[in-house]
Length: 124
Image (cartoon, rainbow, N blue to C red; front, side, top):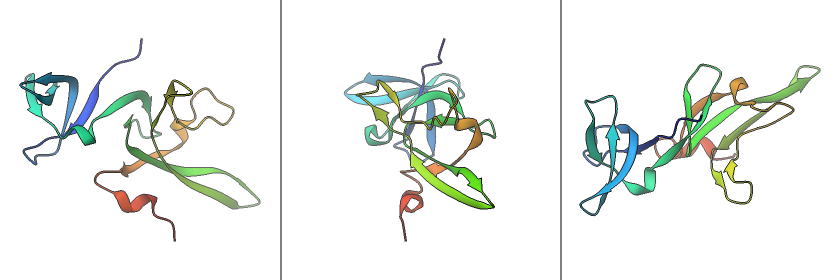
């Protein structure tokens, strides 16, 4: 069974909270499993769900993450890519790469996310 959890940027400016997403007192909170089950108010625009997948270094991949790597190489030429992880309503799933494997994310790295590192997706 897939682990259902979320992350969101804490409103107190102290980083990210990871855990259950709940609405209390009119605000979105994440009940952080790593901090004695404390509920932190989070910016709802930064909330992303865990995809259930990890990158090649074992780092969890969340909605809003930017993953990157190479799609492969021929004669030493690589095709590097970067992609933002998003939910796709039509596919009822996350837009994770799938090139001949059920899960190809184990070939890539989480480079950052769209909130802390928006410049990662800019093209020159």
